[in-house]
Length: 247
Image 1: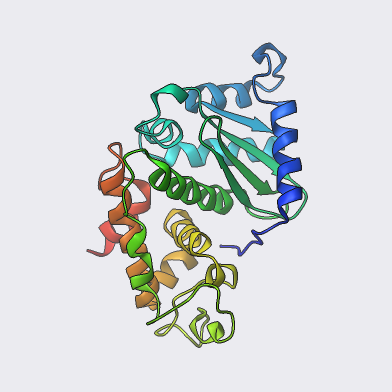
Image 2: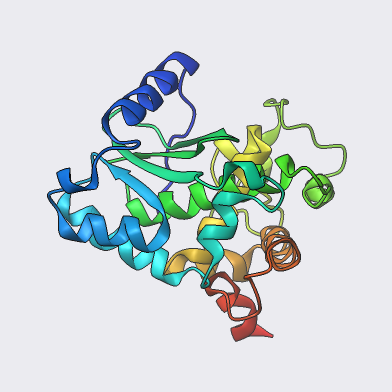
């Protein structure tokens, strides 16, 4: 499982989104050259831009792991009937960034780094979209409000002075709360990185959950929160594998 850089300047992200909108959003499907790309787009209601041939297989296999109907529920929101054409736009970039930008009326823009593992980034982006979905529903909930309870006492994501003692590594498992430096500083990155653990096929992901009780508690919270928040999710969801195998 890879660690990937996530934050980029706002100007760079805006330029990427404009590129997606101009090149892909609403394009005539007859212009699609790759039949596999078209098949994935039509099956899940997403738009794919700038992907390499080898990435399509990874994208297809990743979305196939998600519960039936989950992508539709994730991208349309429960309460925005006026925005039924929302999509998830996947754009693979060489700019070294993984990020998600949300537009309530248009959809979510998943920007992936073509120099890193695509599957881990897809899981990362899924969790960011989940967070946006829950936060921006008209009938909003505070499902993510309790997240900070699973951090060290009086923890502040903006404080970067003493966070290294909470980073996961082979010599620090029992007291670890975070996987990588970005999750230490941003709550959404923290949530997304842990969800990526639950989705990865890399054995190291489950190894971290086995060894780090505080990270495991965060993962369990995400599991329960998603089960409660989405009607299409139940105990058979792919990200529940760790808990169903160990319970």
